[in-house]
Image (cartoon, rainbow, N blue to C red; front, side):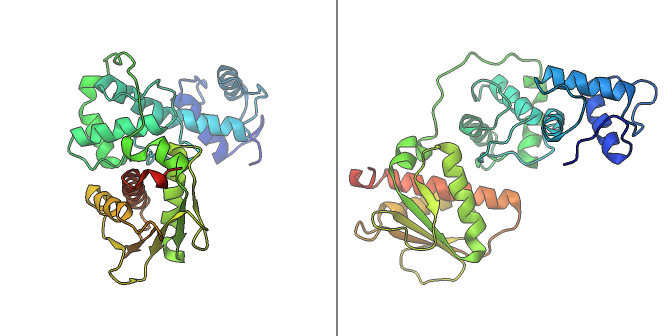
Amino acid sequence: MRPIREGDRGAAVEDVQRRLITLGAVLGPSGVDGVFLGATLAAVRAFQRARGLDEDGEVGAHTWAALVDATFSLGDRLLYLRHPYLHGADVLALQGAMNALGFACGAADGIFGAFTEGAVRDFQSNTGLGADGIVGPETVRAIDHLRHVWSDKQALPPVELRAAPARSAAVLRHTDVALIADAASLSLAERIVNLAHASEPRARMAVLDSDGGSGAFVIELTTTFPGPSRTVAVREGGEALSRRLAAAVASADPSEPHVIVHVERPSEDEHLLQSLAVSLIDGLCLGLAGRAPAVIR
C-alpha cells in the first residue's frame, strides 16, 4: 500500500482518523476531516511510539496493520485457530473474558493460539454450543450475555495448560498423513492441514497430489461418492462426524492405511467450512491415537 503521509486528504485519511479516535486520540475541533495535518500527524506519531514502530509519522503497511489490530472489537470478525495466528484487540478481549470465567487460555497476549482455542471449546461445551473453537456470532452472544460476570472480574491464577488430547503433539508430530482432495474439496483439505500446523508446528501432514508415498496414512476428500467401502460420509460437522472418522481411521487396514471422506456439498461459508475442518482433524487425530503404536513413529 502507498503510505498515507502528511498533507494527504480523502477517505483513507478519514479511516485512519476514526481508528485513532477509537483508541482515544484527540484530533481537535475538526475531528474526522480527511486532512492529514497537525493533530492527526501527532496522533500517528504517538501511536507509533507506543507500539514500538518506526516513528516516521506515515501510515505505511506496518502502522496500518497495527492500527487495524488495535481497533478490532470482539465480534467484528470470525476468530479461530489458524496459521499464521489471528491477533488483535478482539482476541485480547476474548482471552480476558475466558480467563476471568475460569476457562484458562494462558497469558492474554492477543494471539489466538491452541490454548485459546481450547478455552473457547470448553466454554462452548459449558454453554450448550457446538464446541468447534470458532468464535462466531453465537459464541460472541454467549460471552456478551455473561459480561456482568466477567467484565470487572480478575482472571483466575494461572493453571497448567495442555493441548486437547485428540490433537496431541505426539500424533501430529510423529505420524505422516497425506490428504488428497479433488478441486471442490481442496479448500477444506488446506484448512485441515493449516489447523494441524497451528496446533503443532512440526506436524507431518500435507496436501498431496497422489497417495503420499509409502508409510503415510492417506485421507482422501472427494465430492464424488466412491461407494460404501472405507467411506465416511460428511453431512455436517460436530462430534458425531469426529467419532465416525476416528472409528474408520482406527480400523483401517495397516497394509493400506487409506480412508475416503465423501463431502456431499462443500460449503462456501467460512464458519461452516472451518467447523467441518475442526471435526475432521479431531476425528483423524483421535483415530490415529487409537491405532497400533507402530503407526506413530
